[in-house]
Amino acid sequence: MIKKLICFIMSVLFALYFVSCDTTASNYYDNEDFYTKQGEITVSARFAYYNNGTKYEALKNIDEEKYKEKTTDDGSFTIYFAVSNLSKYDKKITEIGVEYIRNSKNYDIVKETTFDLDSDFYVAAGDTRLAECNFEKSFVKMTATLDELKTKTTVSYEGCVINGKEPENNGGIGYSVKEAKFTVSSGLEGSFYIKNFTKTNQKIGKIRFMLYTDKNIPITKKAIEISVDDTIGAGKVKAYNYGVLQNNIDSDIKNDKLFNSIIMKVED
Image 1: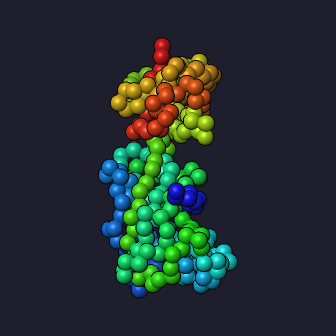
Image 2: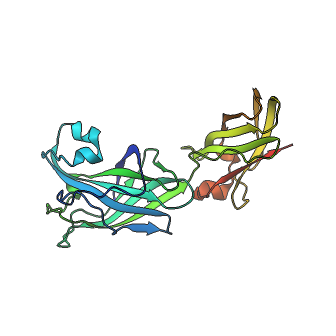
């Protein structure tokens, strides 16, 4: 049975394409040896080192906060994976499975491991984030030269909306989902836009809406009712929070938590 460890997430978002790394720094990697899931998510080694008390200057360019910390000498192994979202839709990464990490001589450096991403690791469409994964000493098979790394990984993810688009102009009042994320209890929480496309201020009261996937599959079993009680100026847009309990989420969606995008349909 594969033991599950925790993987730390860097909060900084990186552009999809990295600037070329200094090839003289042997811990840097900019290879094409990565895993792709359905052409959507790639996971590739970006930087790695043994925790043997050494201060790695190159770490400053990857994780400056970690670089400032006191070095450790516990025999563990740290690797930073670049996780890129090549799809058109936002994703929450939940697991990174490491089948192997090998150097240029094909030596296995660590044991097979699955990392649970317990933090909120959301990757917007077209973006890349770095995940810092630490293999405890008991998972390190050998100390080897890290001149080159070959990795075989898998990745698990679920649907989410991080920064949805504002409503399209319909000549009246427009609605759209700004944010949608699953809660620990498998409910949904987030926010939605209301935009006033008219030429006069509009008083918003109680609204009822359903949530659907982009394939028109209902996410909510029954309409969500929210009292906005606000006035939106002509041409203005505002965002409001919402929450959906898990018992109002369709069972299929709740179980696999997979969707591309969410459409908000307001009922009359």
